[in-house]
Length: 309
Image (cartoon, rainbow, N blue to C red; front, side, top):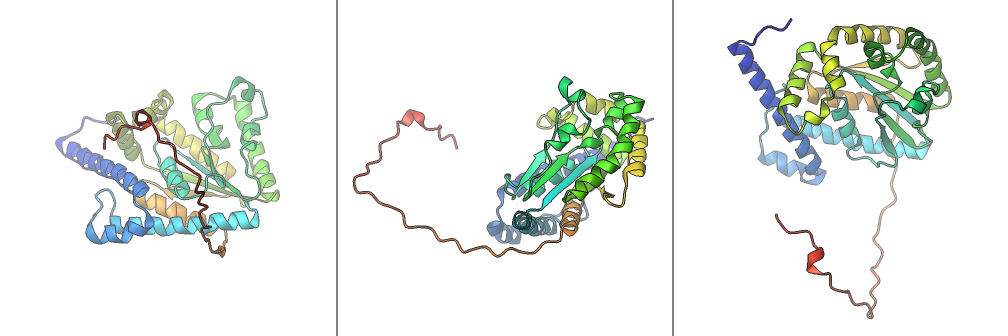
């Protein structure tokens, strides 16, 4: 049972809340700063981290380096017509989406897809359980990242009572064979569980409640999952015990420190698919064709977006 905060706990929450806000700022920096300007930026700005013992300059440098390797992996996947499936599982607010965002940030969306399926429809509930996930599996030369996956049955569906005991047991009987079948078909299957503590999830939920830009992330189901922390823990332990198979093992990502979790997960993902750099053909722009008879028509001023900035 959580007791009333003391003054020291309030200060600790404020410190960690400020660190969380700083992390959101970092996310925007990551999206805006391109590789060519990174060295100049880092030479001018000292950015010690508050929520991690990792220096922010090191974090940025490693993130961009690893993203460069992800581009090489992407080229290799296309060149070799590989089929890669990566599952991201974990509690609500564990940081799965943040890692997926950084993996896909500089990749071709035609090659690397994200599958984040909504709750099943009435029709889908009458289908074979795995059927709607099969529709999102990759063809040759593609990677698919599942932001939650068929393991919903072992987690939220079990805890919230959305499946029967028989359906739950049938899932555990079927999923090892299903995954072995995927692997025999040539799919590279990698499964990650993002692990955070009770206190860390509490902090992240509180930040989402207080931040208008993040409130949309909290659904009634998320709030219920917070209340049922222990039931989710039991479900997770059963899931890992019964589905950690040699052909498709689980990999646990310690995710309390967001920055380290991102780097560690991407680094590990790169190690799971042996790849080499594909030599690209040099690109030369063709000469622009100039037609002396061409006259550019003026664009009406009212069509332009107002220059507010």
